[in-house]
Picture 1 (cartoon, rainbow, N blue to C red):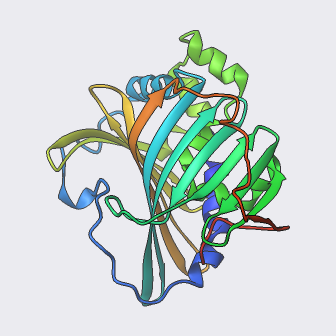
Picture 2: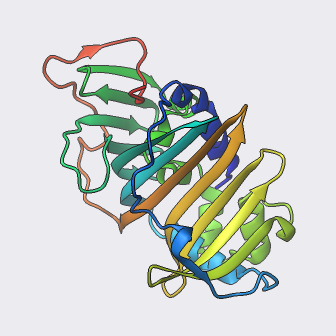
Length: 281
């Protein structure tokens, strides 16, 4: 649950993304946008920690999930900016196993994908359909590379949750103090919350500002169901502004899996290479 893991990954790819910036105008986004938001609660209202605890309990209610997400990177350097879109579909299992399909496209586009990342809990296989190449690395190497940020930050980060913490959730012992501790928040003063209506939909929005790492984390929760709908990270490093947004389109508990789900079989004609990144830049 520690947000630092995602923070490191976000800023580790800034240099790579910066090379792709070519004064590309932003396209209309289908993500939850604060531009059309109406804030209902006052800034002095106490943060709704019970709702946060419930949403976390819901998020970790099963050991296995299938998640479909729309991911958007907005990167800006001086007067140039670029927007990068991804569609991802991933099955995760609590023992660090996952299978993810990645497409570099906006929601609704029909471009082919074929990019695949598979983990058996110890090793990770990355396959690039455009190159017909694949590479193998340890789970730790994959995590350190920052490539997982291109899949589903919420899904991969959830695999880092300790069994002890999951047991606390299962036993219903997620107190306000434990919520803050597991999120790495040392003081309630750094966590803000308010109710907003965006395009007719109601959300409770949590905002956390990490002054040391210099980034802002925002979570959009559906208050009636305590279901997480969107995550966003925003920050600046060495003159580069980056905003990463993941909108969770669907999340299904206990999807069907088989003996091949967390195994990788190279497609015909695929060549193994020593190193390979998911990034197309």
